[in-house]
Length: 245
Image (cartoon, rainbow, N blue to C red; front, side, top):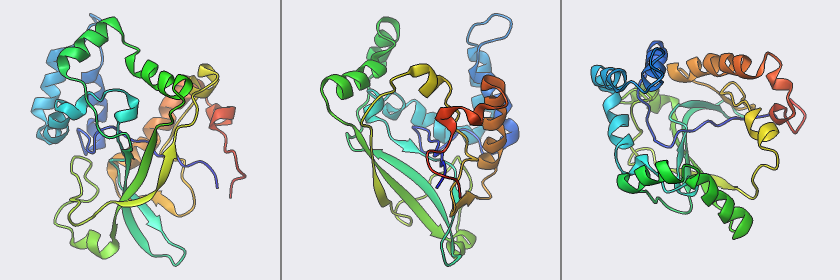
């Protein structure tokens, strides 16, 4: 019982694996503090000077980088979590949230047109699908899992967020289905006040040795206090619907 916030990216890897680089990554993606314009020199300087960003960068500029709306977007935990069974057996897990609508992408030319003429394209598509067409998009929740011995003998670092786990050795295991059956009725109270955090875990799921995951626990809560105030966890949308264990 309690809240489990599974925070996912739409790509299976991240740009960096060292948390100390996270502020520099964020600054390179933001507007220049002097001109208030996007600084492409800063953007490409960071990415080209850090070779570990290459994997994520290639995926970002592939067809996977511009999904044709939220319905056609997969989710990936990227980070590795630690599972503990009732018998105290430990395993390590990565989550995949696979769109049952399939993968559908927009070509860059159309994306540029939509950015200028209809920047709400993805939001409108989701609203029309659920509220007008009465179609409910769904996603299958899967995991990749390795036990402690496999983790110790792994030929790659299973806690490296710039790398995937080969599905040949760690196939997807389906856990269940998420069905999006409604949209928010109050955008401010249900979305703007929403505060996700990787620190929100449930019994049996813990943080692993993944350094980026550990850093996100601090970064998210720090950002929520700045954005919503120190009592953000007491807002109705962030409170557990069921009694805490």
